[in-house]
Length: 81
Image (cartoon, rainbow, N blue to C red):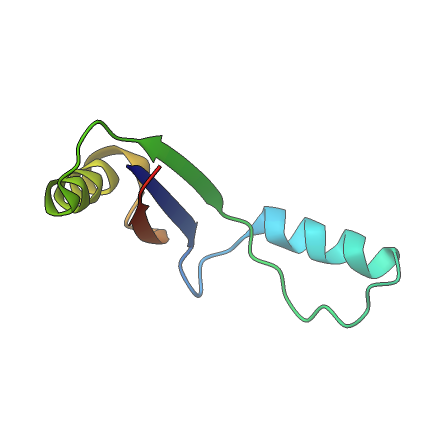
């Protein structure tokens, strides 16, 4: 199984990288871009066929290491290889 974890800054948290990308896109003529938030994508290959165990394990990984829950939000999904 594969876990796909999407992490992004919480709403209201300063995102300097997003601001820099937004500015650069504007300078390149992409004026329709209203805002940019830059996050992280983590792909984890799991050795289990048990979807519930995979969900529980990935949730614990996010809670303990992958996500700074003070400034970041996250979602994840579990898919077959």
